[in-house]
Amino acid sequence: MKAKRSVAILAVTGIAVVSVVAGIDLFSSPGSSSASEKVSGRAEMAVLNSGKAIPSATTPSVNPQSAAELAAEAVRMRNQVEAIEQQRTALQDAAAVKMKAKNAALKRYEALREAQRSSSEERASRDAERKKYEGTPKEVAMNLLPDHGWSQSQFSCLEKLWNKESRWKVSADNPTSTAYGIPQALPGNRMAAYGKDWRTNPVTQIKWGLDYIEATYGSPCSAWGHSQAKGWY
Image (cartoon, rainbow, N blue to C red):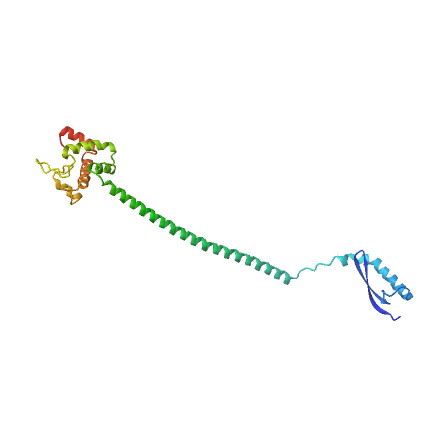
C-alpha cells in the first residue's frame, strides 16, 4: 500500500492530540499491514507523551497589548466618558430651561394674585370707608370714632355734648352768634375747608367737629367735661 502523510486526531480525557505520522493512514482497517501496527504504536506513544503538552495546549498564552492598542483603548474610554457627560449636561440644561419657565410662570401667577388681592383689599377698603358715612348723623359720628383712636365709650359724651349744642341738627343756627351746624362751628364757614356743602351735609360738619375736639380737648369726654364746667366748648 502506498505511504502517505496523515494527521491523527486522538481524544484522551477530552485532550486533543495531534500527531503527524509519515507512513500509512492511521485510520486504515485492522490487519492491513505491519506498517499499520508500527504507526499505531507510534500513535500510542504520542498519546502517552501528550501529557507534557497539556499546559501549553489548554492554557493559551496572553499576548500583552501593544502601546497602540492601549492608546486606542484609552481614547475609547475617554470618548465614552465624554459622551456620558454630554448626555448629563444636555439633560440638566433641559431641566434648567423647564425650571426657569416654571418659575417665571409662578412669578406671573403670584403677581396676578397680588394684584387681585390688592384690588380686592382696595375695593373692600373703599366699601368700608363708604359705609362709615352711611346712616344717621349719630351713626356716622360713632363710625368715625376709631379714626381718632377713640373707643365706643366716648360716644355717650359726644352725644350729650352735641345734644346740648345743636340737638344734632344740621341747620342749627345760634341766634346770638355766628355758630352753625351740629358742632356749632364759630363762625360756620370754618367748616368750608372740609367741603363746600358744609351748610347741608352732616358728614362734613361731623368730620370738622371731631377734628376740633381731638385738637383742642383730646377726646369727647374731655370736651364734655369742659362744657359742663364752662357752659361751652
